[in-house]
Image 1 (cartoon, helix red, strand yellow):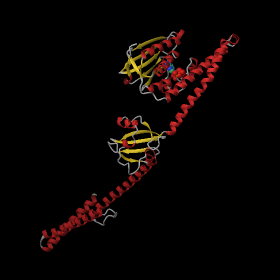
Image 2 (image 1 turned 135 degrees about the vertical axis):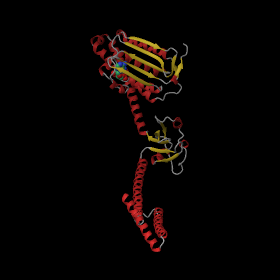
Image 3 (image 1 turned 120 degrees about the vertical axis):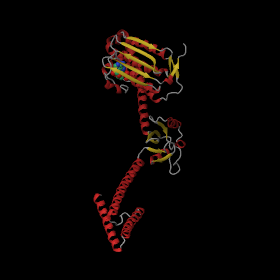
Image 4 (image 1 turned 180 degrees about the vertical axis):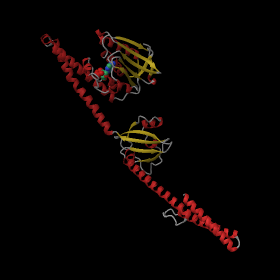
Length: 434
Ligand code: ADP
């Protein structure tokens, strides 16, 4: 750039000298200079004209011929244009690729206009699953096309974390899981995934467990019945006492597993009724504590209650009984004789909380995330020996889910554990006087 300006200044200096010489020739220096400067201005105007014409005729890529500083100006603009064109080409290619990817996605994808429910764009799968048609539905409100009440409520709520399941408006045998993904400020993307296969598999799994448990129940009842008869008969009862006792223990264990499996499949498959009754939790706890004392028997655990007698809960009594009793009986089973067990039912930050605290064997932190899985046991031998089915905490989890609650577990190996069932404040009911 520096040398260019130098040569341009040299060009001006030469022109001025030429102008002076011309002025000397005409005997008028000012005239000589005027002619030379006029020519210089014309040269600039000519190049400027060329520049404007070149920029206007965008299709003509090569810059016009020029000399001096104008050659450099044209060269610079030309290089800038080329760089821009290359960038545009890359962007266009990238956009096309993204477009092809989103069009090919198996999930229905619908883009909503910023800050509104109007449809801006959608992919092929959205046509298949949501019945969107171009151009008919462009600009339509999504709420006019998807009228399923749970979806409308989900969209209105604005809490998009969970998603919602609904039948496809095209084919009600297709179940869709719809989620809204907010992005870049006030923009929203609606994704719908076909869950039909997953749902069928889940239903098959649930049916299988329910059927197997059901089928096992009748032969088990027969075996248990005959066993009781044999135990009571004088000939067999005495000769085979040990074997018969062990057989009775095993059939009882199988009965408990079958009962728990059937309860679990009911909890999974039955839709909870909306009109939950107020449950007298204090009385429920009294009865569970009484059974826990009986279960503890000679082991003499200290079972202490701290119960808010005015606090009841809207829910289903039998389910709450299953969840709470599983936690309390676990505390007895996993706490050495003479240990301490605390059962609390209080409000914590406004929320009703049922907590069972024990001074038992405790659980290492690595096991905590998997504890509510079916048949997950920390110590299989101890679980079986104390009559466990490995399904107790899975039942607790499902009951809490059906009551909009969640389970919190704190534990320290060798120190003890605390299991807390948190329920939403909206489920609090005042207890009826008995
Ligand atoms: P189980 O019938 O084996 O007790 P659960 O589902 O009730 O099955 O519990 C799962 C596992 O969690 C148990 O096997 C046990 O290892 C552990 N566990 C549950 N409650 C306690 C507790 N209060 N203290 C220590 N470990 C516990």
